[in-house]
Length: 451
Image 1 (cartoon, rainbow, N blue to C red):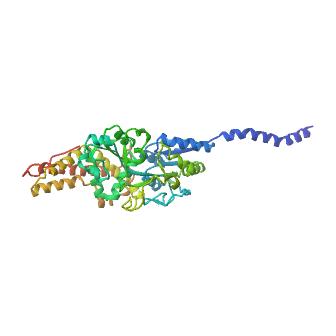
Image 2: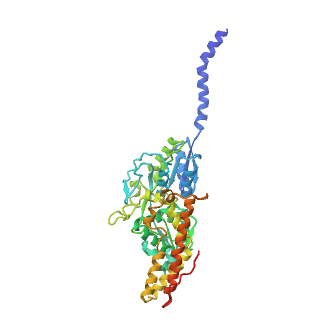
Image 3: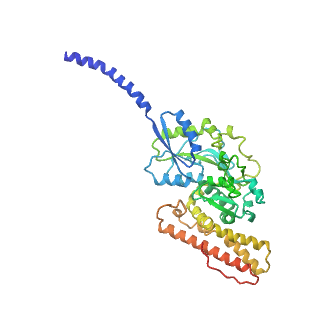
């Protein structure tokens, strides 16, 4: 009897196993894999992608870590123990920063049909660590009605924005808080050169009305008529939120047109799902989502962007031969530090001194000594605290990403103090020269100055 029972049990075991597997199947199918996406994009952008991807991939649950570009980059670098699979943003230099840090894994390009380069800029990372999925142009937004009310001409190029008539009329975000603005600042420095680029940024600083806390605040400020012109990127200027404001976005002739990108992090825990997410973003279904009014981006897929890009004939938009994202990443923190100390914190002083320069030029002061004082004052106002040759002697760790919210090293503190002292010295001397140039026969009299 015992042997008979054993034989029956043995015969039934496969059936029991199959039944258990059948019961476990639905439970296993219901289990979802987690995919963590770190992005600088707002919910209006990423939610349509998340919903469409999860509908097509029922076994994946997408979690979003949403921060501005600088904060998102620091999150990836500093929070290595926190799960994260994808990095998704617009600023090319942020990807270069993460690549240099070893935070990205190699990724194979997808066949989107896109050209290798668009307006001189590579669509995908030539070293194979991130892929472009959308294209964006950098320029400025203005409100024609508000310009007319203030009797101001509409700007057409970067040089126009330096005109003294725009004093107190321009808004921008600081690059230390906005990857978008950082790329604009770097584009000017690379297109016009270090010294001339900072001279332009100094004059621009003299025309600033405000420095907004967020990139979105630039186009919003123009729409609300808080200032006349904003320096921004196309998709922030043309968002549906401002559809009724009458804003106009301009791509200057020497603009930068670059891809927004996506990458898989080297610490990714769910690489297969991350690869599927990249596949979706670069598929035609994902590319078509970019055209929805709530997102309003230009796809890299040439079958979808043919009527959305300017023509590439004639003089190239990138006169310098292309934006160097690696160079931008190498000096990322230093450029932000100089901009904050030189432009943001001295905005009121730059406005006052550049306005004084313009007034003296209008009255056409005479006398060789006074003209020399005015010229020297202009040069000092336009001089960055470090020359191009001095930059080459700054240690690489001091040029890269600077720490925020933590104690700086003695080397960081010493460099920051040295830059600040030179900025104050230049502005103090410029103010003294302008004061002396304003008085016929006046001698140079430097006054102590602090901001």
